[in-house]
Image (tube, rainbow, N blue to C red):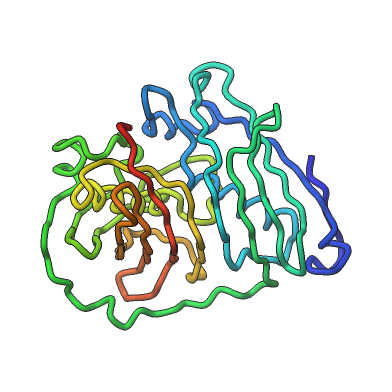
Length: 282
């Protein structure tokens, strides 16, 4: 059920609105999740939840765009044991918490909270094509691998064919990583229309995971994204360059920032304060 609000989407009336919708996740609806399996089960990735929240917020309030998705938290992961059969029903719930701000949650039918985030809303148009003047500079190359070497080599990444989005690893050193990432359009993921390019964003998280393996000695999984902002006014048709700055927090955690850029230096999107925690295995 979707509760629509007429008139000014940022009005006081709209601020008080609550809304919900349901999503069926199965092989039939999201077939590419077959390539995102942890301990045998397909698992909903955080980048897909981020896209769902963007879609829901912008469908709920026409004329409004998500300016920032803040404090996106993984409260409890979502394995999908019934992925190949009846699937899993999930529920997105939103509630306005202030002028131009809503809280989104992803819950199971029994009420279990899996993900939550705060979304800042702005009237269209708000996206600007920011340019990173340093993007054209060639970074110091500490390591370079092709996508085939990354996914078929050490086993540091668990991702199957539909999630093998790193085309090239350009740099991996003590300060971070850089790579060329395929986009959702490159990977031909169905189930759109896509708002955030979930495939490329997952590639950024994969680069951070590789950094953790190299610098902390083990695999990691995301638990929080502090901020996600889209800068570009169009979706990405060709591969994006990703620059990651990462740092360890103790021996079991990583905090990183990631920028995704077009080949001409324009910034497609940014993720800041990405928190990853080391796992025993995944």
